[in-house]
Image (tube, rainbow, N blue to C red):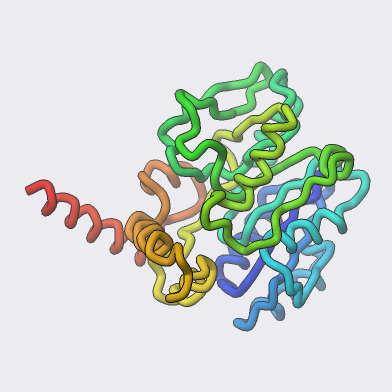
Length: 285
């Protein structure tokens, strides 16, 4: 099997570095190509990506992409090697854990026979899932009940390349869908309507990094990412959502979430989570 793995970057240099190094460290080099599309970073990310390209870690590099996140993924898919059986798109705030690729390979070649799959273990209602094993030892997740939001939320979508090109599946262009969920949710909805077989990868999997929701260094980035403006009719709801993400670090139980993987929760998220728990305790009293 050959995988075309694409990463979309925009600033957040240290997250991008951690992401790309984890791919290089935990994915068999002869079994994947790495395509990186940068959306106009201004913080030194470009020089770092060019260095990775010279070192042979990145196979194809696109700079100064002027489209949105969706446009960047579509561009990477268009550059994918024809011999790639699967396309996997992640953002630079994810990282690959040890054994993720072996688990991914086991699940897609198992009796589940998925045609699209979530390879990143990060989504609201994460407790709605229970782990299962395939006959060949792959770890995957099943739902205990219906999706709370209707469809999966979050990045890390893998889909068969033949299906993408046969049905002309593309990510939507807007940077954020205020009322339709994430970009991945929009693509998953179409796949669901087409009747494609779905699976969600269990650990070891690709994981979310600390995200930076609680990191002052990335505050301007996330404010821009969520498109919060005074004239936005949905601004109040978005502000509430962003505030909640910052309080929780976007991960319900981070200690359990990162247990057994090569990542430690950042001090800024630890501080924010501790403060948030204190506020909850006060509210109960």
